[in-house]
Image (tube, rainbow, N blue to C red; front, side, top):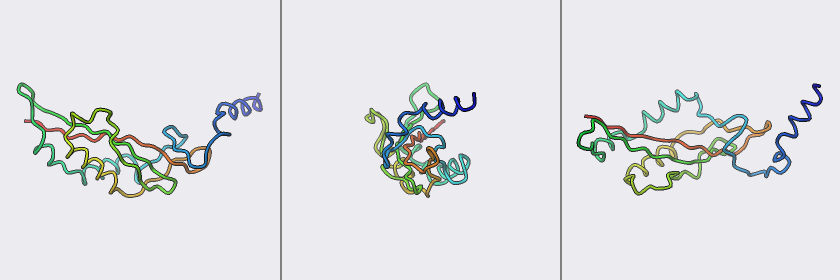
Length: 138
């Protein structure tokens, strides 16, 4: 039985044979991670994001107590942990003021190296999505 499971496990991913050396993955066995983990990533974002943009550019609609702008950024973590190809992921950016897009891209581009993703025991390029939000309230 054990030998059969090993064979089945190897055959479950026929793409492994067809992997290209420079493929970019969005699903991997071990995703890329920020050095220090999720708490360190949140701290980096909190310490480096220009939060004053929220109070300057977000208007709270009448009858509401708060308002929010969220930008979703797509970027690649390469095999060395470097960030590249940082861009807006949102398909309809018309409703997002450009100043927020610019700041979201800046904070990702200027960040430190990451721990690269791993697929089949090898370091691989990994595409990440990161929502970044500004919230203002009365």
